[in-house]
Image 1 (tube, helix red, strand yellow):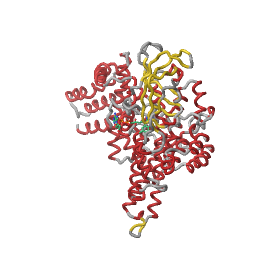
Image 2: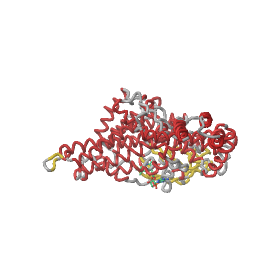
Image 3: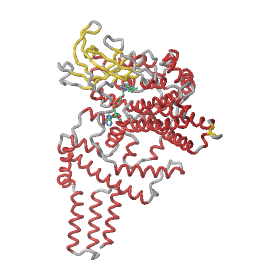
Image 4: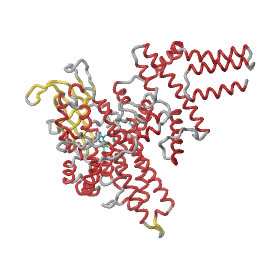
Amino acid sequence: MSWFFLVLVLAAAALVYVQARASWWLAFLIVWVAAAHLSGAAGPVATAILAIVFVLPALVLTLKPLRRAWISKPVLEIFRKILPEMSPTERDAIEAGTVWWDAALFSGRPHWDTLLGHGPAKLTAEEQSFLDVECQHLCDLANDWETTTVWQDLSPQTWQYIKERGFLGMIIPKQYGGKQFSAYAHSQVIMKLSTRCSAAAVSVMVPNSLGPAELLMHYGTEEQKNHYLPRLARGIEIPCFALTSPYAGSDAAAIPDVGVVCKGTFEGRETLGFRVTWDKRYITLGPIATVLGLAFRALDPDHLLGSTDEPGITCALIPTSHPGVNIGRRHWPLNAVFQNGPNSGKDVFIPLDWVIGGRDQVGNGWRMLMECLAAGRAISLPSSNVGMAKIAVRGTGAYAAVRRQFRTAIGKFEGVQEALGRMGGNLYVMDAARRLSAHAVDLGEKPSVISAIAKYHVTERARMVINDGMDVTAGKGICMGPSNFLARAYQQVPVSITVEGANILTRCLIIFGQGAIRCHPYVLKEMAATREADHGKALRDFDDAFFGHVSFTLSNVVRSFVYGITAGAFIRRPQRAYVPLVPYYRAATRISTVFAARRRIDVRAGRRSEAA
Ligand SMILES: Cc1cc2nc3c(=O)[nH]c(=O)nc-3n(C[C@H](O)[C@H](O)[C@H](O)COP(=O)(O)OP(=O)(O)OC[C@H]3O[C@@H](n4cnc5c(N)ncnc54)[C@H](O)[C@@H]3O)c2cc1C
């Protein structure tokens, strides 16, 4: 009989491994019980017990009406009770953006050939020339020391060059006078600028990120696009985007700033619009912006727009010359000299036409921001931090070669080599993440999870690289001056950690919250089923998702075990992989499978807290 149980365990493991359907289980168990009986291993009573214990449950699982009534229905009720109510804002945050190859990585089955099939990103001749000529010239014009000690800003000549040469319109289509560069080219430009001057990189990065060209391109009315995009592309308008308020940072959907729908006078005519009151802080380019992208909560107590009292978060473009717009005193974010500051307004009347996308987009601001944030986040911080780390690695490596102590180049000491090795290794990983996330944008994705992973890990590793660099350069890194290539980065690394979703929040809510939900093949479907109003459909959808989930989890547990005891030797070899690297692909697949089997799903996560 023990042989029969061994067969049962091995066959069950194999069926779990391949995620066999319930009908396969039923067929196998019938054959197994019959074989036990016919071979004499099980007498009539034992056969009856085996049939009740094994075949009957398999029969219930195979017959969907029974399975739904006896198992899925009570489980669905439990899910309905334990899943927290989700507001539309939270739902928007979870559902925003797209998942791409990251889904395979989270699900334990990474398709390496799919990834490798995309090939490396390339620049067009025009993009390469811009990088070699214009971007190089801008690097010659601006450096950290002068912008900080002489101008406390970019020099007027540098600003002029940035505007004239189209640096502010890299993402704007050619038809509006922009450069229409690929995400990869945009990333290369930001990376290069970051090796020279953080103020230049940030001043170029922000208009090409969230605001507000990206929003206009996706949601603006034709009139708004025709007016603003050419002006933004040529630097006639300097934009900023204001979401963060003193009371709402990470929890950006909780902004207290309001716009009440009302009639007012605009250009001498009675006009429908908003009376807006706001108080924002930390706004990059705010002190010099000519057009303010503003997020506020729309209220419509008199139902002038529709039947809803609170249409929700709304984004508008307000010229900063508009009466009532108050640009406050400039902030000094860790003494970085890119322009940053607060702005506010009280009961400022703006016409409805200033809402991005017009009347149709009133109340859709949160979704717009969540959708567009992913693309910017995939490029800005990963690129600028890789640039910063590149100069740190290059400079520190060179310094370690020429600086001598104990009659020896310090780079020859093992302790220093350890730090240099760590710097190089981190930089390699960071650059790979940067290329991958930019590439995802070029493929048309809005990679909410990959961009969060890239933002978090690139900035965290940049912090490690800079710290190592400071240790190696020692006094030379500490005393500031024109040739100090590290101190400004050391000073400003917390800015990168904080903006576009502070890192702790990004890891908890976006990578493990939104990531776990969006990249999982079944969790989002289970959650959707609990909210479905049609009970029949809810039960059917939930049943499919729930049993898919169970089979998926068990399969990953068995696969983790099998991969563990075989050291992953039988994991399929990616056809496109460079042969010496195959063990690493197999190791990564193992890690992915274990991760998929072990992670806990925090259904509360992935909430509204993606910040600007
Ligand atoms: C230099 C600079 C430039 C900026 N530019 C802009 C801009 O142009 N436009 C704009 O609108 N905003 C801008 N910001 C604002 C920026 O987006 C916010 O600073 C950021 O969202 C964090 O908000 P906070 O500083 O209030 O920190 P808080 O929200 O107070 O967070 C404090 C800490 O708590 C953690 N935390 C918060 N909630 C959670 C959670 N649920 N789970 C785990 N951890 C959590 C955070 O990770 C952080 O570590 C800028 C900020 C700076 C410093």
